Amino acid sequence: MLDEATYLGFCERALTSMTGIVRELGDDLANERPDLPGANSPYVILTHCLGVMAYWAGQVNLGRDVGRDRPAEFRASGAVAPLLERASAALEQLRADVSAADPAASAAAPPEDVQRGEDPWLRTQGGVLLHVYEELAQHLGQLEITRDVLRSRPAGQGGRSG
Image (cartoon, rainbow, N blue to C red; front, top):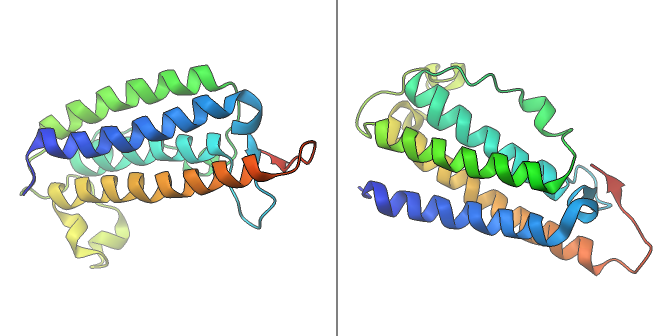
């Protein structure tokens, strides 16, 4: 199994890459959605990842109610600077949650689908932490493609606002 520092290194690299992209895009482009069915803005993608980190590492693993509003994550928009501050705080919380986790222990509050036997690897805290990294890596790729699509549009051709 990975040690805590190695695991956090991978998570931090993914999150730092995401925050760098959102920072580079700035308030306007970070809130644009590519003109593709179901596409999310960079702001939404990063907001969703912060929700993923809090929910899975904090609530599912440790039983701490994080008050997540998943549908609101996909409607989120706003200035980049406060989002980057929230990302920094979320990374600090992830560090604390990983430190408090016992990879071999059962997750404290697994979702109903896991309780029904779906995704049995999410029953342990170690499995849940791997899922957190899986989501960060997946969404980093999505964010990189989203950035590339937004930047490739001809000047003056906007997408849909986030």
